[in-house]
Structures are given as C-alpha cells and as structure tokens.
Amino acid sequence: MIARIWHGWTSFDNADTYEALLKKEIFPSIQNRNIKGYRKISLLKRPLENEVEFITIMLFDNLSAIKEFAGKDYEKSYVPDKAQKILLRHDKFSQHYEIINEFNY
Image (cartoon, rainbow, N blue to C red; front, top):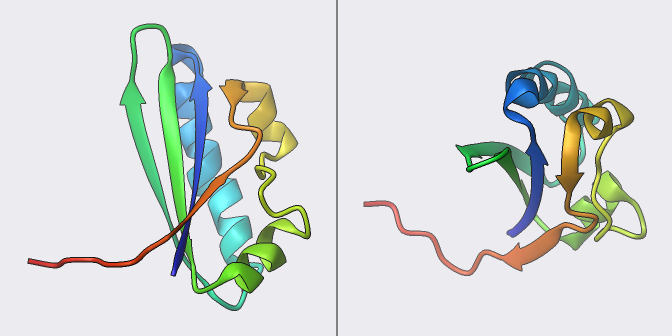
C-alpha cells in the first residue's frame, strides 16, 4: 500500500469554500474515475496563525494505480483550476510513502 500525501494552504476566509469544493466536487470526481487500486482519501485541516493548512492522504495499492490517477509524471500534484484559485499556495509535488505496518488496537 502506498500513501500519497499533499499539502495546500488557504486563507481563513476561503477555508470553508475550499473544503466544500473538495468534498462536493473534487473527491467525488476522483472516486468516479474507478481507478483500480485506489482505496480512499483522507482530508486533514488545521488553522495556523495566518492561514489554514489542508493535507490529503490518498491510499493506493501500488505505483501503477497512482500513475493511472496522476499520469506518467505521477509525483506532480493534482490541483484542479478551481482549487488553485482558492489556495494561497500548495505543494507542487506529492510525497509517496510505502505503508509498512498499521496497528489497530
């Protein structure tokens, strides 16, 4: 399993709008692509001093599934135009980590 992690930051005024865009449009459009090996996406949010940080963590079975999602240059971040207009800044590249163990207590 591979986790694809990405960060974006927006203003306090745009945080709710950005969150709604993710939940109502962007995440469903990813789900509707029916990518074999795509498992789920998690959304994290935290307020900072002057902005709000968002983190997405997507889980994929393997690198092939990530490439189906993101293309040949799979490390580049996926940020639709609507999202780019709301964000102050964002990671240009996603980070990929192999999940080597999970504990459920």
